[in-house]
Image (cartoon, rainbow, N blue to C red; front, side, top):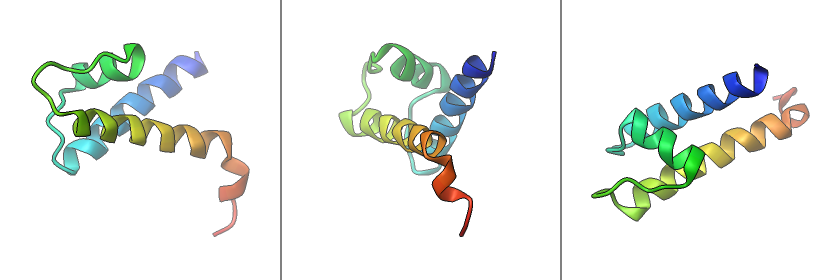
Length: 71
């Protein structure tokens, strides 16, 4: 259950953060890219890379959360 919830949050946060930066992927296209690695037709490679980078950053924070306890 926790794994599924984390996956959902990762998709939502990656999509919204990228949209703020001008990315045109829809939420469904983002989910397909992050889960299956399939780029959306008609979208740029840079948009896909942006979304994948957001996902990697979120995973890094999750896997290294102990480094973020003190600011």
